Image (cartoon, rainbow, N blue to C red; front, top):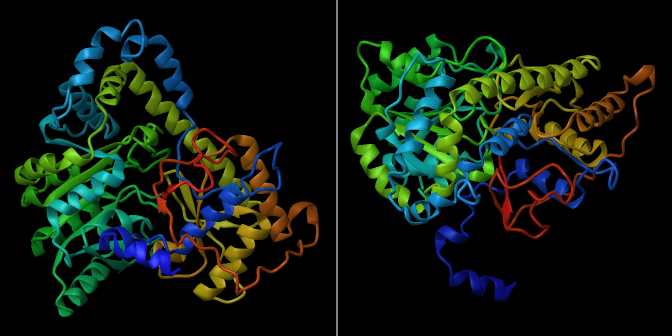
Length: 484
């Protein structure tokens, strides 16, 4: 211990502080999964990974396209003539073809109702890098951003760890399906000002992580009006915008602002990524799209620390420029996500487990309040320990998302095959004692004094897979653990 403390003295405060947010019950499930990962034949009693928002359901469509378009890779006979150019391209503006293709793709995802300027696209290393990049541009150490709760747990890392900014929750409740209200926004803003906290902006996720819901146009208009009235920034995380699988359709802040007569566009910024919409988190494609010229210019200079590989840009420029493929992919991906969501939630309904009505994302917000022994957050954690250690399902407790009400859990449904989904549903049925009229299964209680810990591991949501010894899985002592 003394040697470890001495080693820490040689490192920086940023490297060694505990502000990265990993000391949360949200990440404890990762350790349980890593130590005992489910595999249908090698380890059928292992933990099933349901805490990972990956989207591999339509990757076969991209694989098919790659086989038909070998010229899109500089590592093939058909594309090798581009190797020298791509290998030496270092402009941090990015390949023009890539920026044009991404701008057009963003427009297609929004139904063509809004156009995007390729010159405003700034690259980042995935959504994680893009979120930190915009925060570095907008906030000084100690400044705060409002964020509706429940919200993505790794925002603490992405937005605050190295920037030293802070988050102030805006409480949303199940009484109105966790929709943000102006009363809650104004209350959180006023409380921060009374505490002499400098509020620089508001960050929202639309579609929501963890709720799987989309914001309606009226709510977005109210939010844009609120940030204009108070002259603070609005950052819209729209990384799940193409995961909408049923009505209502996705409405982007970009659509709303162009229809508002009095709107200061300099205050509005979009974070985007291809990790969720295309299911390619390993390619690390993040985007900052700002309507503020100064933000674009300064973000581009800072993006040198997290550029997208030019080889990746080259490939995606070709893929996203194939309009016929993009149209087919978006439609089929939405269909498959909807079918999986429906299969999973209908399976839960059979054992009287309900979920928040949702229409987007790679997860749903499961209501287990009726199963709590105590209607408290400690009761929520007691139930979660049973689920993870006895039922062997890694779902994520609502308290980790800063949910103000106990008993909610996020469940990811797109990161596994159909057979694993059915195994998970069977385990849940056994747990609640509803399977073919059987008596409730007696599960051993998890000792309350035991606690899993991630005391020395970084997390990055795009480096892991639910399959035992998968090529996407880190080795047991890898420093990379994904949070999503």
